[in-house]
Length: 324
Image (cartoon, helix red, strand yellow):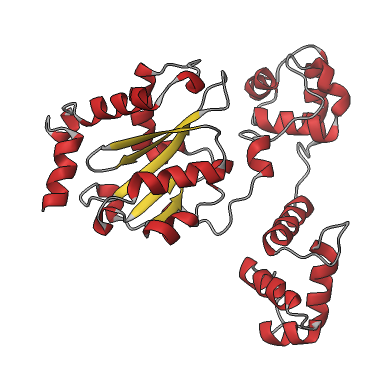
């Protein structure tokens, strides 16, 4: 029986990238990975950039390979011909995919489909039906798609599943969450960083929401705390967090990432942002907010009793942890 084929992992592709930069041959790379040299050759031919073939980046190559594999295994929607004809007929009558999915079981006993399958059938196989949809778009992205996230890449993320379980209990101090607060009125933003147990918050104004400025702000916010109060920090997948590796290098706090579109996984800072919005509501032009206004809000929140803290203040809880 032949050897089972295993796809190259991201770690293997990183080794390929390093060894290529060292001018190693395909045979040398294959030997180091326990792979045939033709596997290395095919990998570089298939997943290097289409324009600059000699320029191999592991994470981009891994993304190309993964997307190609997903595309290869896509199954056609609505395989059953009567179902396809029913969908086409009803779409032309002006029915929505939701109405079709909800009605088909009544018209054909035992036949069920999801409205998402109907949408995919139309956009992938019957684009001529798109004009019949109430909200038609020339191109439909998957649910939850964001152009911002498709362009950004966050290297070497550690996902939340790998964060120590004790962090979720809020029994230990020194675990933080951070997020940016933006406004359509200007390029300026606020960076809010909240400690999970005490709810203590630090707020910093950013002249622009770039990764460099956001990560510098987080480092400044936490660097003055004792090392035991800088255990971890949880972030989302926004492009402002692409330089997250600067945080553990500068202050020792390990970074962890929520799953995409799971903002509730960093609920502490999300709740804090809701409190900050009471002072700086949506459409506030952060370019017009000065340092003292930001610090005033920070002090008000840190010195306000919280029911979840048995009516102690965040400042009191954090100070007690530092003194202890």
